Image 1 (cartoon, rainbow, N blue to C red):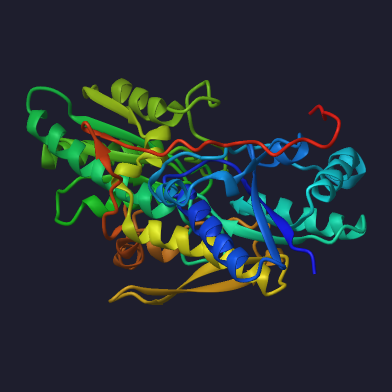
Image 2 (image 1 turned 30 degrees about the horizontal axis):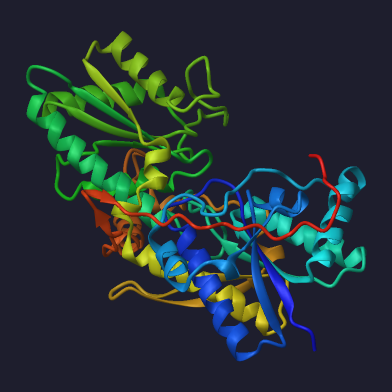
Length: 417
């Protein structure tokens, strides 16, 4: 039996822990290669995700030292590069799929690991089906990743726990700052968090509030239709009662008709926050400050959740195990065994069950007035931000690994995208 190689591709927005998943996958693959060299070959990584596969721009991870691969656990961003390139239908993108077959065949790739969210799982399923139709044997394994926490069936998505920890911490610290100056300065603080269709990250900011009056005082979710009148009344009541008002709004805030609420330019981060700030200024006249968590929230590896890191690593290793078992079109997921103490295990689901399926916040996680979270939501969120797993620091700054990223020799003509 000839060992077949694996291709790993990162997809979509990166996270503080996606490289921990890569670390778990590569270390597990190295162990399998050592134990069964006739079945499991090298792991290649697509440079910039699926784009690397199409352009035959492949990184040979076997040339990285064990020490540097281990340090991937602590690195933010995407060590191999990610992309949002979408594989279209076979009818209109046949050339892309035929090219992938050529690349896979040229480099004897029998395992494909696609690390991303629900859209990526849809692409992975589609790719697997088309490879079968084209007669190329390929085991396709999805690996979950998304800061939005909107992938179905898994208890949580790697990347979310660390974003949740960062946003809750930022809200607590900024709240203390604003509270100390509110009498003569800023009365309203607005933090805009990621979450185009689901309010999980905005909900996590609510963990900063443990007692009555603690910030944040208002949370705004895509799941709750925005009502400007109710919102302004709540802001005024908060300022009159507490002296200030701290708000966390998801970037995908919607009105009752499901249309996005934002300023004139909804293509840029901060449009929702700016809309709220303008609304407050024009109707209430309060001095305000607006902050964008933006890329900071998903890149903050220095404040990553230990739970998140451990789950990200375990899912990468589990993906290799599923492939070695001969499985395909599956996704390893996190199953919650108990809340207190928080215990979890790895399960698996077919890609067809999660492909392009978006999980939104359940109604019982949102307070009756729509402006905060419930105890059920706290019970769900708190274990996900538990623990610290800081990177090594050198001269006061995080010391993140820089891989050699040596390319595999090309065997095919160039391919333009």
